[in-house]
Amino acid sequence: MDNVLSFTQGRIPLLISVPHAGLELTPAVEAGLVEEALGLPDTDWHIPLLYAFAQSMGASVLVGHYSRFVIDLNRPSDDKPLYAGATTGLYPSTLFDGVPLFKAGLEPSTAERAGYLERVWTPYHHALNAELERLRAEHGYALLWDAHSIRSVVPHLFEGQLPDFNLGTFNGASCDPQVASRLEAVCTAAEGYSHVLNGRFKGGHITRHYGNPARDIHAVQLELAQCRYMEEVEPFPYREDLATPTQAVIQQMLDTFVAWGKERYA
Image (cartoon, rainbow, N blue to C red; front, side, top):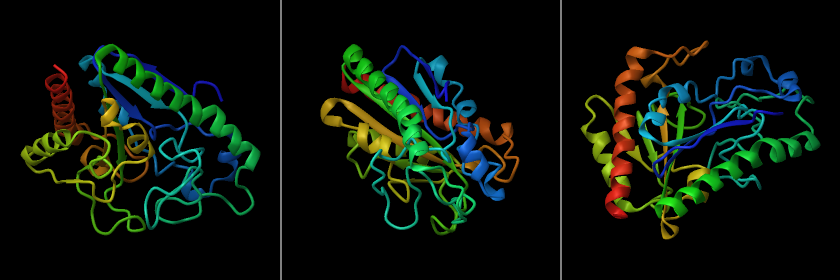
């Protein structure tokens, strides 16, 4: 279980976290998956590609390499539920559509899962925390953007079709209220796109745990509807024609986030 993450250090006070784009599996997880799970359908597909512009912005970028089917980097280590109703935990047991993830009796053992916590989850969070503290020490503040995507229709998790841009600030607790206001303004001006703030997705563990405006760390989660940049059926291809305009809106949101930080901490 080497090479559990990749990290690129930037020059501006923005860190982009990508916890759910990983495709790596452990032997125990791969051997136990049901047939419906072998294509890794609940992956945040192509997010590093969609955010490829981030390094030219000067942002730091942290990407997890292991699938959420091994361990979910956006859940707390004690596995306390983040959402009321249907959700998935630190060690997912079902697919997003409610189908059991593992064949009966073939779930990874408690000892194996303890190893995933130590060797996959912990290094990611050490790297995330260390970079936020470095940015805060160097710039006086840090901005965290937790980048996600999900199928636009998942009846087991939410009703109807998801808005395109789902911004989460833990009901305003993870960042200054002006941040959310300005990001919403970008989404409102994006013709043909829909958005919501703190709807079904209010921000997972990363946003909730690390976002701390009192310590000048401001965190936002974006859950993006996958229909806006890719095909939502296997083999889940990237669609440049869809992705390019969506990418432009995301870049505008990130530029707005960074500009707010410069203004606030000038």
